Image (tube, rainbow, N blue to C red; front, side, top):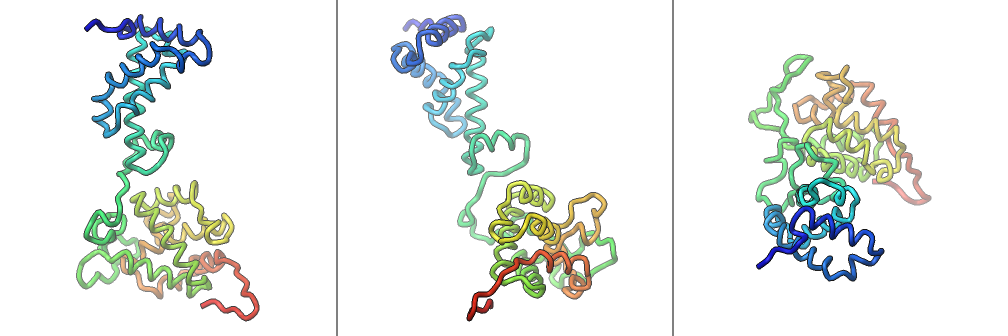
Length: 282
């Protein structure tokens, strides 16, 4: 079977030029355009399957780049199309894995983000296998040795989370708000893996202030209290560790309440709820 003229670089250029100057509906009405899309679907089918996508996804990506002027004037239009299709398929596959838009997946290129996992995909609890929740009692402590965990095992993240919730409640936070704040932060920490990354992510994109009915400054104080202050000057200090990590490392509760700066930060950030007549908050 004779290959179509548009299978060559120059043949594709001529067809793209014809379609570009034939009017706005040329791609919808031209038989050659339909044949070109079918050819592109077959040409990139293997590439699409490699990334777990359908040939039609590759054809869509090819259509988008073929309409650009830069493709028509390129030395080898097919090379431009192939490169663009491959990138589009990579990011489309990445977006499906991360459960985000293709544009967001492009922005995460080069970052070590793993694909999203459902809790039901594993038999064990997330705290038992995810490194973000594993803090050991024998981690470096700038203020001396702390009591080791009697079992020598990582503190369960859920117990640490409950302890931090209780700390916030003791300092005037409504239990529901304290629980919502901690679980929201912990979920982002689980996804990001590191407290400093989770801090920046929540500060940039988090909806925490809206969820908790607090101001942005108060939200920043909550993040610093729970995840630690990311400023380089506080690296290795209790302020830099954050409450969640300090609890998981075995710091006694009394030490948290003795930290007057931390106590004031949490108290000042508490939502300013006003009870309606006859209502009480439990």
